[in-house]
Image (tube, rainbow, N blue to C red):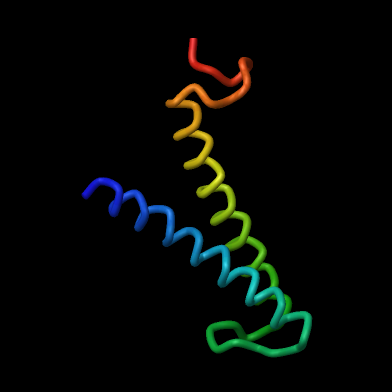
Length: 78
């Protein structure tokens, strides 16, 4: 059951990062999505969404690997 909870916790920010990539791509092609009134606002929201999702997933993986001592020596717990 805990594996499913961990999967859901990682999927939500992953989907957020994918939506950020989609919004940035749509901005480059000039397609304005519903919640945004301006293309530049859509691009900024997409960039922030992508970076937040990437940071969360990266931090989750780093935390898991650090707990299992699968990181470099300088990052291991003391």
